[in-house]
Image (cartoon, rainbow, N blue to C red; front, top):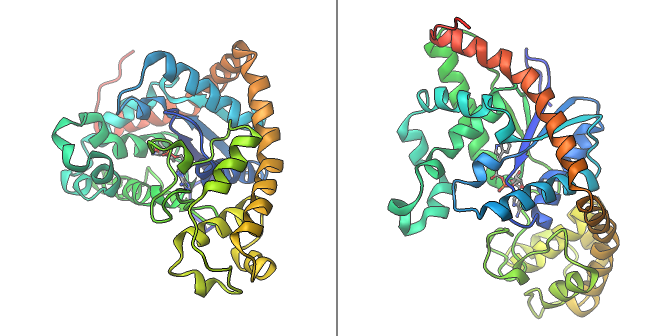
Length: 340
Ligand code: TYM
């Protein structure tokens, strides 16, 4: 991590918009746990305001929010060490979000590749919220003056936009108020690809459930999905360069490395020469051994929703204690009269 004049503080979030996938786990949650245990202040959010930028059934949204909280806990986030909460319980996100909407330039938003990917040819039919979403994400981060943002590769552009928004706010108002946060993207799992198409990201919104491993999948389902994962007929090579044009094979090696905590280079030397008929069962065993206890713990935690809600409420109180004074100061800088 590089030095910044601001106190180091980690913030990140995940949308409760469906099943948590292995991509979310390797790209994000696992890193959240590492950062929590490195002693820095860590704040992790379930970003329900972001989720509603596309339609969410209200009952599903509530369940997915609690399931995501259960996943955070089951993966090792500890409410004594990290602040865990859902975004809508802390109004400062939306309030600062509006201020930042007025700082952010339309030209910047038009460059956001994720909006283009999600909207496709239907941009006219998308919500205004989906378009404005990266500026709300900037507010999530800046409401805590967070400095380090662990995310997967696909969120890099949004964190870079946050830096631009912070810099423009500081410049426009002649202050040194917001930090320019750094994306923290490393390890083998920063871009886990679909099991059906190695050129597409593994995503909770992919119509094919076979394309992803969900954190709540049982052992048989995990093994089946890995068995059916698309591959090619060649054996595995002994070096990563030879995987350059084999996206599916590279993805499975990366997944193995991500789960086992090794580098892809280490993994490839161990499995060199194997056919997928040999390698896939190894990967399935590894994935099941690692993920099944997490899924069991998630199910156990989901048995006591009131305890999850208590943790989220407590986390929201602690988050608000940090964000409210920062928001108040931002309001003062902007020139709002605050008289109550
Ligand atoms: P979301 O909910 O799409 O994804 C949550 C996190 O998981 C990572 N991720 C992946 N990593 C590796 N491989 C994949 N296939 C994969 N799919 C998802 C994402 O990069 C992300 O880190 N806008 C964010 C949520 C957000 C946020 C924030 C993040 C809102 N406010 C403030 C950081 C800070 C999003 O939609 O992530």
